[in-house]
Image 1 (cartoon, rainbow, N blue to C red):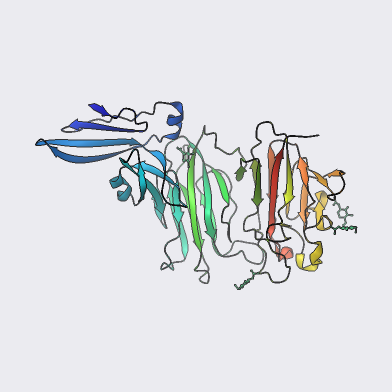
Image 2 (cartoon, rainbow, N blue to C red):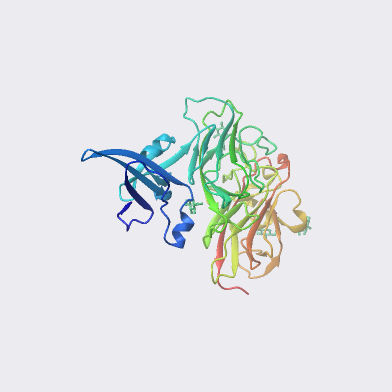
Length: 398
Ligand SMILES: *[C@@H]1O[C@H](CO)[C@@H](O)[C@H](O)[C@H]1NC(C)=O
Ligand SMILES: *[C@@H]1O[C@H](CO)[C@@H](O)[C@H](O)[C@H]1NC(C)=O
Ligand SMILES: *[C@@H]1O[C@H](CO)[C@@H](O)[C@H](O)[C@H]1NC(C)=O
Ligand SMILES: *[C@@H]1O[C@H](CO)[C@@H](O)[C@H](O)[C@H]1NC(C)=O
C-alpha cells in the first residue's frame, strides 16, 4: 500500500493493485478531527487501466463536513461523487482538494438518512398528498445524544381558534425529550431533541391535513450532536442560544399593530418548555425586553387583546405578574422588573403574562433560562401573537 498526499487531513486515497481486501481507515490525527469525523467511512472503487494492469482505486473518506455552494443549505458531507448520487444526495461543490464532492443530503417524504446535516424538505408543488410525511434519521454513530432541528423554513397551516395544532403539524419521535406540537409559521426557529445514544431511529413527521393550505413548505436541517460535544444544549432546553445578545420568539410569533384585522391566535396551546441562554465568560446577568419590531404586540400572551385599548397594548399597564399569571406566561427566574424607563426602582417577579411587558426584566439567576408555558385553551387569547423578547447579557451586576 502506498499513501498518496499524506498531508491531506481527512482524506486518504489508498491505491492498491489487484483485489482489495481489508479496510484501511483514514484515522483522524487530532482530537478535534476525531471529534468531528464520523465513525462511518465511505468507499468508492473505480478501475484504471494503466500499463495494461488493472488498478483498483479505493478511496476512503472519513466522512467530514464541507461547505456546499448552495446559499441556504450550506452544510454538506464530503464523499465520492458516485456515492453521493447513489444515495440520492446532490453534489454541491467539491471538497478534499477536488477529490470528493460536497454532498448535500436532502430528503423528502418517507425517506431515510444516515447523514449528519440532512435537510428535510417538502415535496415539490405538484405533490398534493395529505397525511404524514416522515423522515427517518439514523444516527451517524453510537455516540449521538442530541439532535438539533433548524427550521430554515416551516410554514404550515395556522392553529385552530383554541391554539391547537389540529391541522398541519410537526412532531418528532424516537428520542427522550418532549417536543410540543408545532404548526404555523416558524422560519428561523430551532429546537434541540435529546436522544438515547443506544436508541432506535428518530422520526420527523409533518402531518398535512388542510387541503386549503397547499402552499405549505418546509426545509428542516437535522444536525446530530455527539454526547461530548461542546455544542450540546443542557438538559431541559428545547431551545438554546449561545450569543451574548439575541431574540427569542415564541413559535408562530408574528408582530402586528392592530387588534382588529387579525386571523385568530398565533399562540400555540399546551406549550411547556425551556429556552436556555449560554452564559458567556465574564457575564453575570441577562436583561429581557419585548421586541418592537413590526408592532406593539411583542408580548401578548394572556387576556383578550381585542378588549383592551390599543394604546395600552405592549405597556407596563397591561403587563401582569406572578400570582395573576395562571394560564399562559413566561418565567424568568430571579427576575427584577422596572416600572418605567425613567425610574430605577425595581420589583421582583418570576412570572410574566398579560398584554404587555415591563420596560425591562433583569436577572442574575443562573443558568440563564426562560420557561414558556401555555394551557390548552387560547380562546381567551383570540388575537394574541405570543412573544418576541430580546435578551442582552451584562457584565455589571448588583
Ligand atoms: C454534525 O455537523 C455539525 C455541523 O453542522 C457538527 O458541529 C457536528 O459535530 C456534527 N456531528 C457529528 C456527530 O459529527
Ligand atoms: C387574514 O386572512 C386573509 C385570508 O387568508 C388574508 O388575506 C389576510 O391578510 C389575513 N390578515 C392578517 C392580518 O393576517
Ligand atoms: C400606566 O398607568 C399609569 C397610572 O394609571 C399612568 O400614569 C401611565 O401613564 C400609564 N403608562 C403607560 C405606558 O400607559
Ligand atoms: C393581580 O391582579 C390584581 C387585580 O388586578 C392586582 O390588585 C394585583 O396587584 C395583581 N398582582 C400582581 C402580582 O400583579
